[in-house]
Structure formats: structure tokens, C-alpha cells
Length: 139
Image 1: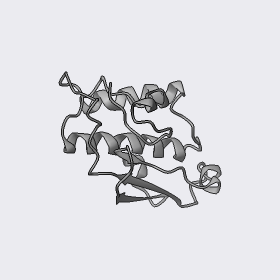
Image 2: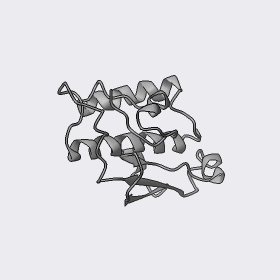
Image 3: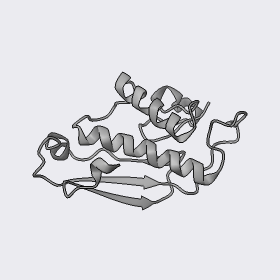
């Protein structure tokens, strides 16, 4: 988070209903991605949190290392979407769920949040019937 606490970055955060997702960080325009290495240019990103999100009824939390309440889900969503923004800030566009470095960094973030079993990837999209890079998934 400290990386983004400079005049080089602007992150707008919104609360909005998102079908099937707890949050999203839409990919910025191509100029922002290409300008990622230019410290003189302002890079703008958007982070959207869905505070009404609840996992589908077929997703359960049988163990204590996964978020189970709204506050924990929002913390995990914020962290997940900031990871997407971090990749955008390096000029890495979507899709990036399948990248080994993304998965490694996500596992580190999830473990730091206390949720080592939490996954974040396209291979889990069948749970919600949606394709995209903006949903946190639980198993």
C-alpha cells in the first residue's frame, strides 16, 4: 500500500453492487499500462467494493482460515483488488490470474490476512457462473 502513497498514483475507491463479486479493479486504459514505468505521469486506478456481497449458499466455511463475515470479506476483497492494481502499476494487463507470480503474491497476501486456504483465480469462476478477473473465490 505504501507504494501507492505518492503523487504518482491516484486510486478512486467506490462502493457499488457487483453481480457475483466482492470487488473489482477494472483494467486501466492502454496509455496507463504503457506509462507504468514513467514516474512523471499520474496513473489513475479504480477499486470497487461490493459491501453487499455474500458467498452463494453452496460455498461454506468449514474451517477458520477463510473470511466468514462481511468485514473479513471486504478486507480480503480490498487486498485482492489492490494486488490487481499493483500488477497494472507494473504494466501487466489482464489476464494475470494464471501467472505464477500473481498466484504466489496472492498466497502471501491471503496468508498475511489469516486466510491461507483462500484462492483467487479464473479456474474457480465456475462456482459463480461468471468469467472475469475480479472475483474472490473460496473452496
